[in-house]
Amino acid sequence: MNYEGLLLGAGAFFCIGLFHPLVIKAEYYFGVKSWWAFLVVGLIAAGVSLFVENTYLSIFLGIFAFSSFWGIGEVFKQRERVQKGWFPKNPKRNQ
Image 1 (cartoon, rainbow, N blue to C red):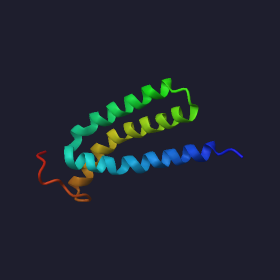
Image 2 (tube, one colour):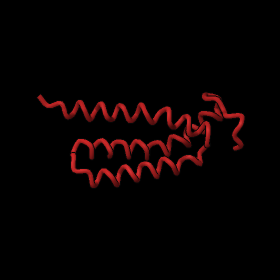
Image 3 (cartoon, rainbow, N blue to C red):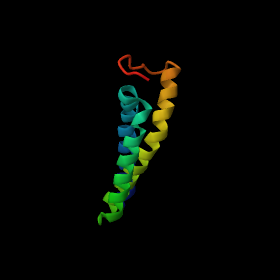
Image 4 (tube, rainbow, N blue to C red):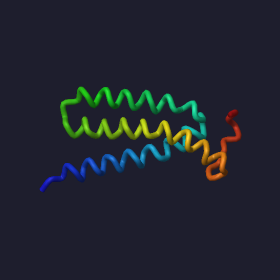
């Protein structure tokens, strides 16, 4: 039996589950200027994935990198969701 697909699927599920609340918290505390952090993390993970010899770890890092890249767009969409009142606005942060 091949478990690799299930393991990588679980890794992708983990990344999605991790980045969903990270995007919400990043927008709440830092606003859309947090997009660059997602870019830097994604670039680092993508770069490391190129040099890791373990195939599965390399694939997981690639999934992690592209989940981080996805987070860039989601931070801007999260701002729109906050403006619509779907999520709370941070009263202590100046826009």
